[in-house]
Image 1 (cartoon, rainbow, N blue to C red):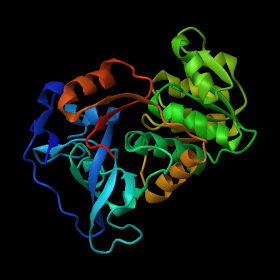
Image 2: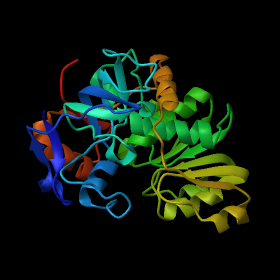
Image 3: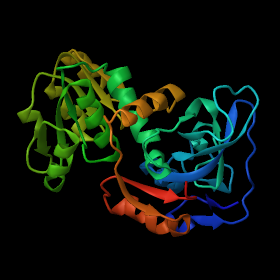
Length: 314
């Protein structure tokens, strides 16, 4: 089978399409998926570059990729609720016990797979797992956002931010977001009530008494975000752990989130998509043979929506 692999860490030039990669076998608690599409996340190029090698060293050659959509081809021991032929999506990343999604067949923990949304195709479904799980975990599980509450979402035009805006609006919250001027109309189309140009307008001077902040940007943005929250508010950051001392001084809860893609979260996402609450944005679709071009777009091009490999039509 074909698989996009690396034999060493480095830039996009280390990406190799192996036409004779070993087809994985579903073990206990796993499913084998015939992959129809797989999307690129920033974590994928960071893994390729070696940023995670001290924490999670890979055996080379390693198949990259996390997000996938396809059809169940085989089921391992002790797996229930899924059948061969089911249309599914999930997260078979090497970082979470899978075989990597950039391949014609992938193995994933059954706990990171669910039935795909019915109203979208495989390309759209493959664009959702990690960014969608990040948004749902932050807003519904950590923040427990409620109707009428106010939330600031940093990086509203990004992959996670664009889903988070829609999830927040489905809950009935007031949503402010930071974005560049050229992305203002885009984030408003997603439902944002207030857009702040992060290049020109200090958000911490414009906003106050917010119930929550969801930070997908990091750096100075995280610390400045404490000024926006009211007492008892919640800050969730996707980029490292927020300053615990500042959180205590401000009387707020601060959480550094490591996203966990689970069957329950994927089911919730499918419900939101099929209910028309969340629309998936795909920026561009590539064949796996053009992997270097696709990675370049993700790393340098600021795509509005996800970049997806179409591995098989269906």
